[in-house]
Image (cartoon, rainbow, N blue to C red):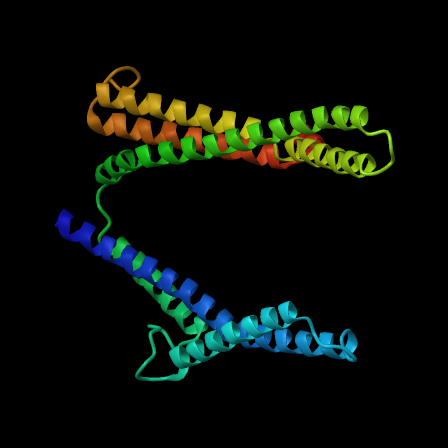
Length: 273
């Protein structure tokens, strides 16, 4: 019974994931179907406009003609191929040609409703759900560590940009006496330093990386304690799994609260704290 229940719920999840992918693909297909002819028209009009307003009494440069001609050929071929894929019944390679995104969204809503009804009918016991929750935690720990590495790299990149540009400002100031090109370089470097410094202060990648790493380490510590049967998980399996799920959800809630505090201005953070 448990195996059949699991297979049924997995099948519903696969159906929902497939519909979501089909919706994304269909959006790209519809966008290409309408955007490509518009781009083709824009390229042709630009080509004609350059000839009329710039080179009316002279020959258009060969390089310009080749660029616009090549772009027009590519866009025309793409338009024709998309038209065949959308409207031809025999040579169409699109699975959902002729189907609107709205219809696919309705199918997705119905599939999600069927999954909910099926889950209610085939809901496993609390102990089984807690055991399943425990098996999903390593993936959550991996996600937290991956996000922590990402924000750590962003922070390091921003810091190195700040260091390099700050040092370059001093170097440019010492090298160039004339207003140009030293002045332009100084303006660009100062702009980069200002933007990077502001981004570091606003997005706080270092703090985000630290919080994510701390949460991942805490959850992993509880996973290890549960596997080894050490404190605080020294009771029977049912009590241990319940305590484990409660603790991990508390850690995740604290992580979400810290993220919300980082997203708020400094004044808002003081009020929340």
